[in-house]
Length: 221
Image 1 (cartoon, rainbow, N blue to C red):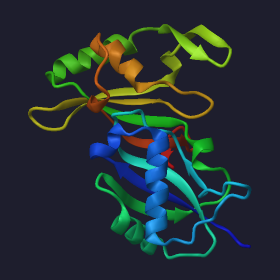
Image 2 (tube, rainbow, N blue to C red):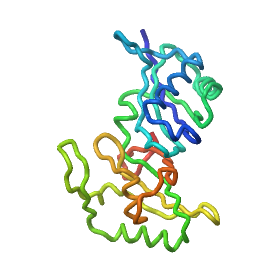
Image 3 (spheres, rainbow, N blue to C red):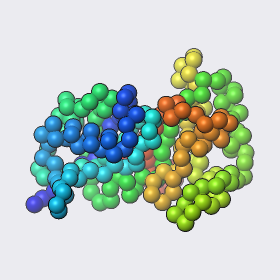
């Protein structure tokens, strides 16, 4: 049987921010079933829809652009996939695009996560926070690894920090951080380093997930 692999780009907001990844997986599966898409199922005693998310979203955090790979057993027009899913999606879940993909899945190729941190402080103070981080040669912290807790330099995993003024009352710091299976830096940790206190996950929005383009830049999944 021929299979067709598609990558969906979606956003997650509202009450859906406060459910864990496994529960969100069930919501997504239910949306696909209600949409009537010809989804492929795994083999075995307990078949399940074949879905693969690029990177689970921390509890309480919203996202503007996230990605999931799905496999269909029939070819479906891309706009029909988007429209049918949006018709049956719960509040807070919106499909933005669908496109065919081949090769490695989203989870295997994601390398950079882009996050907006709401700081609600004057732009000059936000820039000072950024400078304090950027001027450090190393940032050594105890970090959980596969072999236990180790002192780790996270500075190489902070690719970019910049202040963004969204409007008169809400300034943000945008963080480009390592993300994925090989290297991952928790955005909450970087936010805490800058603010001096642990922020609420609701203060963070994941703007996009990207990979290196081989030319010194990054591109969306």
